[in-house]
Image 1 (tube, rainbow, N blue to C red):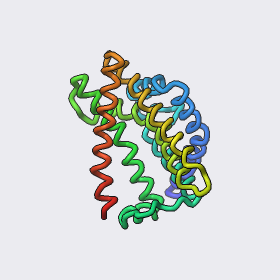
Image 2: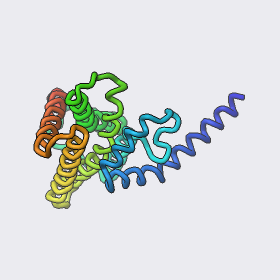
Image 3: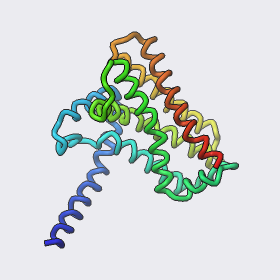
Image 4: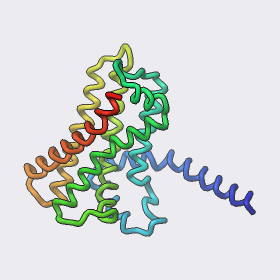
Length: 222
């Protein structure tokens, strides 16, 4: 009986793993083609039964995580060295792929978290796990392409013999795309002007970057 359970678990794992080859690129394409539509889709899926959620896609946090994992694998494959002057703690993080993925996941999850919190506070809603989950999930969809482009830009900048400006272009495009889409999302969800939505976006991202600096500063110094 235990052996049969193991076989069935392995069968389910194989199925889920192989379906990612189909649903990850489809989900990423859905986000790039229509970011706000993808975020609305995520909101609707939160109302479905748990087993039926994201049945034709991959859940937002997993899309973000998969994007970071792929970027990390590319970085390892091209043998990107750590920057000069890297602290001992940072070297310890970069030596282990698992630690680096977890660290990058935390870094790229801060902006979705702060933006989701900003929306709830502007709407006057109580902050709880249930109220925070829908906007955070939607934000993870928006953060995935941005994380991919910024990671790609960082890798390009560290590869010898490649023009640094290509990396800056990737990072700039990813950042600009995210800010524009974020502004559109706040404008739609809060029913405010473009200026108000833009200010809200800049303020939310700035607070997220401050939180990031608070985390990274000790890591860089230790």
